Length: 353
Image (cartoon, rainbow, N blue to C red; front, top):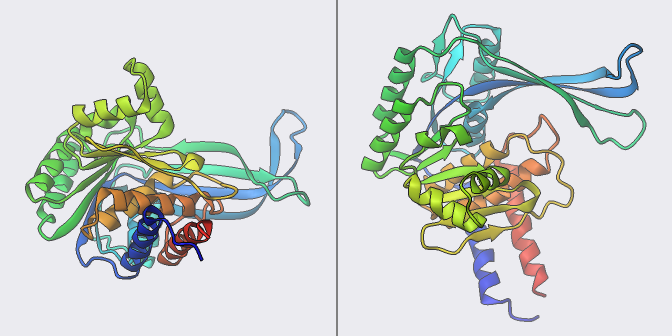
């Protein structure tokens, strides 16, 4: 059998090492602060149109609810055996109760979650449909969002940041999951990042493009490939590499991880060539939860003392898991991630034979 190329062999060993890490996670906790969204899914058959409008009629055959956004990360971290301190705010409504109950049932510690009794919990409802008796390719037909029109009280948000900072001693990583719903505030983010840097704890930020100012000083920021392209055009820059370098310098990040879905992920670091990792999923099915899975994988790797390059490889494997999952079944877990790492190592090994 031919000798495996040294570079490929090093990649295989990296994947195997990450596999061992997933099986034996760090004892250090991850500090997670961010917005919570209740995701609702309706799946059914869409065999005909409404008689009075060009709209599909969906015969619902299955429904489910899932604690999403930052709660999605908390659930995934627990699934990987990583201890998580979860700082979030829920509304005092039925949706908030559903989220809290699901987190409790899945073993997520909810003691750091605050309740704003007069507010409603954000909910996103997605309706999927396909033709009955044909190829089972469910398509998203409609999404509608419900959220409070009132802003979160500043006092609760700042106390939440205080609590997250107090939990930093002994932590392995911090994740700020900012969906723009108010939990990650300008002052709160600045204070948490500054405290984490002082404690030498890596910070992972997953921002909206409108919230980049809340990521200054982070270790790594997550962006989508289309978001990077939008930033490139807005700033009249020539290439993705130039755009990444510009924003890494402007926001004092160590790195930017760009999620490309079926195009894989790319890690941009200061004074380093880009690390491009391909997606090897044959037929990607969906994208919901991609950011959360990448943030989870980075947190698991960095809290274990692994490099950003190792974290990017774990994030790429995690994204593959999400792309291959059925809609509404996209929460990362140890078995699926371990299997994916084994598959990636095996594919590299047989490609050199």
